Length: 380
Image (tube, rainbow, N blue to C red; front, side, top):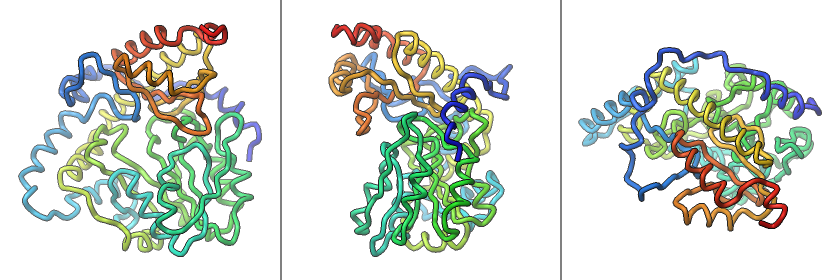
């Protein structure tokens, strides 16, 4: 694996522009829903703490949700969502397992493959749901620190595999750092471990990636490898509250997971998912808005002298050189909710990307609470 991958990726971050263009697209408020239609909150409240889509579902998705109420009195099957996902990825429906967001799918994976103990290999910090359920199966986590540039150490992860290892977990892009594992490094990992070793790759933030070194791992499922990819509708599609996601794997692995799957997805979520997949232009607009706003705000923080970790997601991390909890409280007192702690990175704040207005307010509060980085060094 490329030991200099951090340097090359930074070059990509600075030099690669998106190939998509958005000329002539409708304003965001028409295309992806007006923020005013969201749940009422205190005046001036800004919630940029949970990596949500601040624009909400499109009008088309809302129409599909409303129509689905007509069937809410009945027990409904897949309602077309399995076929829609399969067609979207060029797979068969027997390669797909629905779940309530990525979280339920990850728990299903734990329940299916960790019965009787064993261990899993992952990094810290990352999306810790997979670790959270280890006590249910009496398994253990073999946790590897991130590299100095906040990335997965795939060499260390590969060397940690032993007889008791049940699977390797990779969040790609990683939550909370926003960094990626390149396609070349994923392939090298797969080629270097036993063929029967399962690799779980959480692609919740897949859509936001611009770095060409990255690629979805779904192609490895199509090759018949022991790879499970998890996806969610919570992020780019803007329906986090409906709880819809899925796992993708070869039939053998799906069959082992299916007995542990709750099948808890309701008809409204299924209908919303079908319509969301049919609107690629909406997803493209959300991605364009997110990445544009993210780069602007990250640049502003960088200009103030703060370390901002390059991010390929709808959030980013900024190092402040001191414990984040007093800062989080100061922001909350000003009606701005920012991300929680992610040990051991307790001097880094995770900031979700909101609307232009929300991020303008964030920067106002930042300048009020934090100011330039050199003022922190001076004890101001």
